[in-house]
Image (cartoon, rainbow, N blue to C red; front, top):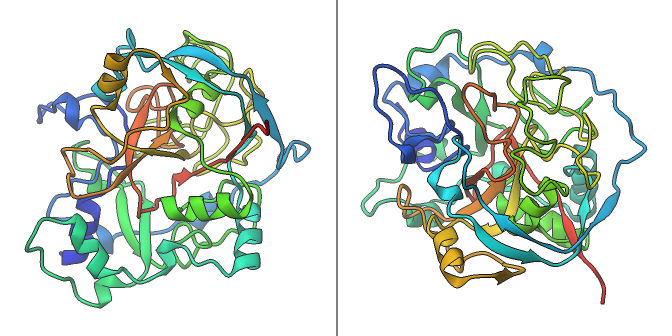
Length: 381
């Protein structure tokens, strides 16, 4: 197994989900990260078996374009942030704490490939996934004494979901996450894929600094975690999902999620295997699309697993900007931001991260093909 792939994958978390515990392994609450990348020693073997199904990637791109590139005003308000009585909630969603959010504008949809391309064309920006790995920077995030990988292993690339033919142990996430050289926003699944018919799909394979660079160029910013949760609720203050309390698999299709047996079979009941166009399904009460599923959305906040308790202890928090630094004991050397909303890999039986309170730690210098972002703007006074 190649040293670098093991090191890189072992320091990146992918989602904050709950799943049915495999009978052959007892998993603690802290391990309930359904796409966490603590890998086994068969990663090199799995990597060699990676194949790309372009038929699944090249799906229809039809959508309503009338609302593209719009922003909506999100009202100010008070709410209880976090989860209290949700059986699917992880400890990092607790305790609930009172928050006041000031009014702001939010993109009605995730940033698209076409939007990001305009930014790149105008600035010649190069994303982190397109650059060779900076070992001097990376080793700061690893245990002392970690050996430097070979130069070949430091070549540009990113992480890509690949559905296995069968799955024995849901705790071995290397079964469906692969390091692919050449994967980046222009080639989300690797060099053989492209975004030719994905102009109105969310841009993915984006690291935190890539999202921040786009937001600055566009005259916007990334949302705080509190702003994101308040906006996702869409006025439904005590419900689990942006659409209410009905489970995602009940009734009409509500979002882009994994329908079927994860991670082996996706029946595409929502119409898509990978990402969906950004104007898909019904918007929430504030007119925002895809606040659940499709792609994880990067927020501005550092991730601190004790932050909610600190907020609870402080009483009412007005317009919180998040903790002052990253704090995640499972990966203490890694700088973590918050992502929200879940992705196309979530489903009822395995992953519940399309709940409005779900949150996950995200390695700020990493990208995946199920992580994107949307922007917000301040109200001029």
